[in-house]
Amino acid sequence: MTDPQDILLATLRDTDRDRYLACLLSPQEKRAPLAALYAFNAEIARVRDVVREALPGEIRLQWWRDLLEGTAHGDAGGNPVAVGLLAAIDEYRLPRDTLMAMIDARIRDLYDDPIADRHELEGYAGETASALIQLASLILSAEDAPRSAEAAGHAGVAQSIAGLILLLPLHRRRGQLHVPLDILAATGLDRDAFLAGDERDRISAAIEGFAGLGLEHLSKARRAGSVPKALFPAFLPVALVEPVLGRALKERAAVLDHDIQPPQWRRQLRLMKAQFLQRF
Image 1 (cartoon, one colour):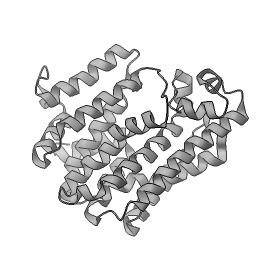
Image 2: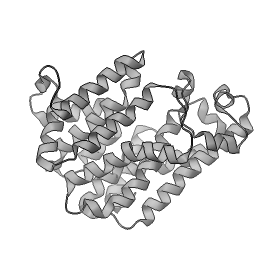
Image 3: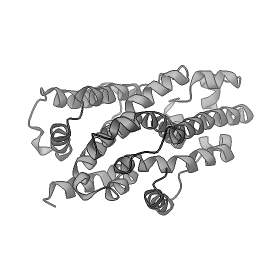
Image 4: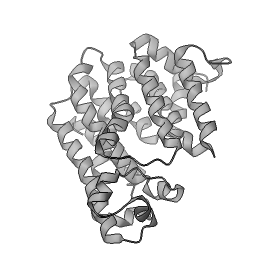
């Protein structure tokens, strides 16, 4: 492959299949910048998966900060995601401060510090998933993007919670915890008791509270007003949230032990249906 868009889409297909499919359901002329943005997000989101210790992870994240600040060491031309991201920033005037805040938020992923409460979780989601929706909206239609800011904020929190529920088995093996401590405390648990996985009834109650918080934000996103048609592709991945949260409410403590992600073909059909109905 020599076409930059093909390279970006292939990279995204390998690192974030759902957003890759969302890209294919976006206008042709927007696919390359969206793919670059989403591939960048995938790169910084998976740093913990490709390093053994926090310091190398921080170095990887710092490289992206340096790129955005124009001080990266070496030639970024060999990195198609970096080239595509810089092109998207220039063409669509994407705010670099928002992108750097996304990078900084990912530093917490490298460590095992728990999240204190729902407000800290909402802040983390706001700087990652919500910001990604808003940046994609700027690419799709800068004129319409401000109209969807509230919906993007709540949708990003719901999306983050669904993603963290899917990652519970992996995070538990690592000793990581992203269920806020105030939700655990309300069920009589602490970090160690939750990760141990023995008190199933209390853990089930905590999972219900966590998934319920996600559904609360999803409902608020839907009530925030209709998303302009031009922006809807940025919200397509949000259509995959409700099945995960609903499954978590049914599986309860069992989500610690196995993957509850719907199969790829179901996710693809759901994205296509959401695009057709213009409803997430």
